Amino acid sequence: MGYAAPCAPSAVALPRQPGGATLDLTERDARRLFADAAVARLATVTEAGRPHIVPVTFAVDSDRIYTAVDAKPKKAAAGGLRRLRNIRGNPRVAVLADHYHDDWALLWWVRADGVASILEDPLLAAAPIALLRRRYPQYRDRAPSGPVIAMTVERWTGWAAAAPT
Image (cartoon, rainbow, N blue to C red; front, side, top):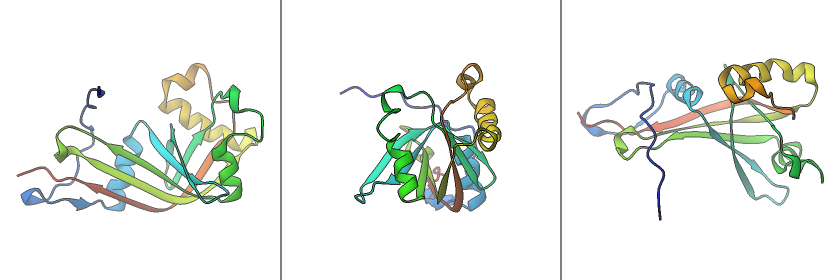
């Protein structure tokens, strides 16, 4: 089985502890690492209580995370995307960003737990879409056309491996 080449180390400097111990991230460091990640995973819960996780592009504005639905023609019918149906049924969500490297001293993850809403009004979605367009060059030529998921973060948690001294 082939593996993708490891990602370059994150440009964000992590706090380190002596002796190679691991550490829980402060809320400030967790938010900073999260905001620097290129992709995250959005976790919702189905009406049957099963987890549903999808990768998302996103933008962070203080304690708000925004992700937009881009062109998904095969899912446009039949009640919309699963993540949107799940949020309508249960707005509690989690978003996870992480960094993997073959040097495990560079590993980290951050999770944001909170409550999501769906912004379908173009006026309400305009500012979050502008944030996404600034962050992702792919959206500059073709802005997301679907609704925006707006998450209010209630808790930032994270972990990082410490580099050996």
